[in-house]
Image (cartoon, rainbow, N blue to C red; front, side, top):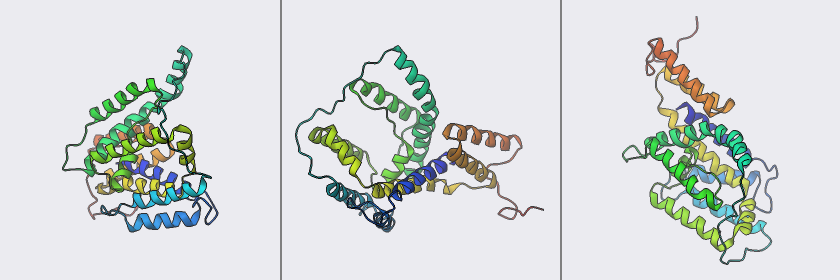
Length: 279
């Protein structure tokens, strides 16, 4: 729960910073503080509405900003979605292993595997959700099978799951539809026009989407009961924000082990039902 709360706050902070980056009220590309306020109002008004997902309204607003920002609409055609694969020698492999793969390992295991599996259980308690082993195998196989055609390393991520759930994507068919749309855009537009369109998407709208996803992820920590459990959760969340996911995991485990060693139940409450004032 501490990791989920910390990651949720981190995603929210990133989204809020992106939404308020442009200090002008409203720009030609529908960016700015007024666009951020409008996007936030739409997201809050439609929060939890499965029949009217806020994501579609905000996506339409963002597309309108892209259309205003680009000088001319991109031309359609048939393009190869495969990126050229660079030549990699032994020195490159070692550099990537030491500087990228190993530092990323605890973040991927905790955020993209452990936290994602736990969040799936919380969001869909009546369904058979994927296990930690299944998610880890999915991440590994997807990266190994696509690296040879220029695919950038990727993972699932609990923040993405929380955002997709909040904005209406509740079944596997929604993910299949999203994948088909992405592949269709890659083939129809090609890499250069697609990148220009992505760059022109209003950060104010995208930031609100991220912030709402962060709120949904952090909200899963609301079921923590007991003083000890609350302390462990806050220790983990604060450590995520300041030290990173790996350190937060170790600190949370250490705190839980200390309470267990002292014979304290993680769900226990104070005698008065709350915190006793210091003497």
